Amino acid sequence: MRSDDALAERVRKLQAFASGIRASEYHVTNACNLRCEGCWFFAHGHDKVTREETNLRALDEFLDNETVVRRINTAILIGGEPSLFPDRLERYVDKFEKVTISTNGLRALPHQGFEDVTIAITLFGAGPIDDNLRAIKPSGKRFTGLFDTALKHYRNDNRAGFVIALSDGCDEHIEDTVRKIQDNGNRCVFNFYSKYGADDPAGLSERQRVLDAALYTKEKFPGAVISHPFYIKTLIEGKTEWGEFGYKVCPSISVDYPENFERLKNGNRYLTRFNTWAADLKSLKLCCTSGECNSCRDSQAILSWLLVSIEHFCDSSEMLQTWVEVAESYWSQFTFSPYHVRNKLHRDAS
Image 1 (cartoon, rainbow, N blue to C red):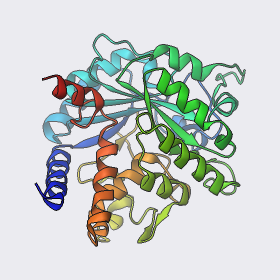
Image 2 (image 1 turned 45 degrees about the vertical axis):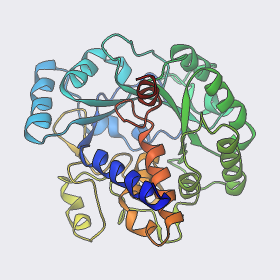
Image 3 (image 1 turned 90 degrees about the vertical axis):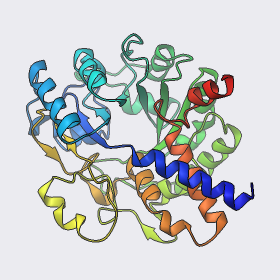
């Protein structure tokens, strides 16, 4: 097969797989066992805007509507901290074909009943920065060893991957952090630490140093760092040569949220069924994260933007190759994906 035919076949397979994903995001709870500095959920008062639904029968009815009426088959579960309520998580796993659970890593998600979920474990910065920013109890009391606790909970667990939010100062620690993740039998992706509450939440005083360190670490640990170099550069800089990331182009917005209706008509692509639901199971959020669009660099939003923008990668076979690699690396995060390492291993064994 010629190289261009092989590339076209990879594009076809990616688009065929992605066309079957109908995703929405759900706040499982407003509660959390940490109070991380810069957490968008608490910084913007998401825990106070709605009152969470605790009745499991009401949750079942809501999920039936999501899966049967809206035909959503992929659930992204966030909080608060979802691991605090495994009984609610069981409902989502029972109803949805594909489930991703975001967690801070302090409590372990059980294996039984959750064998096929994707677990995304948050880190802020790297090394001691993570404890400085995240190891804070709701009482305000600080502790240490949060990253080590998460490593212990998910050692050699191929459901689990770490999401490292790159921050000022992390360039000194990121190599060692990724090495520990690799030695623990896990993989990681890079996110961006937006300092919500600061004058410039997306500001990095040493932007180039952070970028260089992230790219170097990707090169040194290609099996452990899933994130593609093109994505890493876009994440840090917030733009590509053909556009700047922001509300007008972000695909990860709630399609049924009234304030988004004008955005949906501006010609830029969006995820056609995507909604983010509050923990009351009634209220919609503007988007997949904070709603602070001018400073948002959420990894999933940035990646969605790149993936729906394939037309900007069609000027050359080299650029299309980049898009394919970004897309394959993105989907390799998820246990339900044919690009995930455990499914590749299964196919190789077969």
